[in-house]
Length: 166
Figure 1: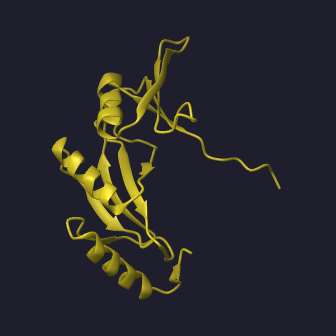
Figure 2: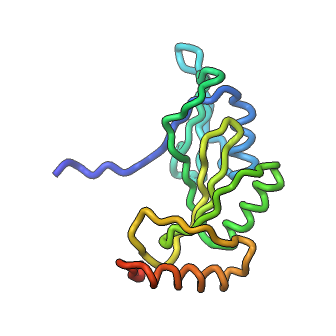
């Protein structure tokens, strides 16, 4: 068996570094841990939520303008509670974001949205259940947390392979 490799961080090329840095710090709450310039002239901005991790996301200048396809499927950030997800959804709406995918995967509640350069982002919260993937069912994030919990558990219990995460 090879040694265990633990995921550390993700780097993405950007066209407008100040705008992207503002979004990831002001809106999503990451902190700028470091900045620098590569020998070729590209600027790096290292972002993290965790002071023990120098960076979890790196923004790097050099993305050509007008690129219509991005090989990054999504940038996912985990939140602690369903209330945190509701708070962040409201915050994103206040930022003028209008395109959301709000789904339960059974094992997580997720909201998908574009960052300022169109990269797909996900904020999610784990549920206490497991259900085989892929699975995505829209749900009402505006509903009370207890209602969302009950509805999600009912959906999961009706699927083959349901089990408690515990």
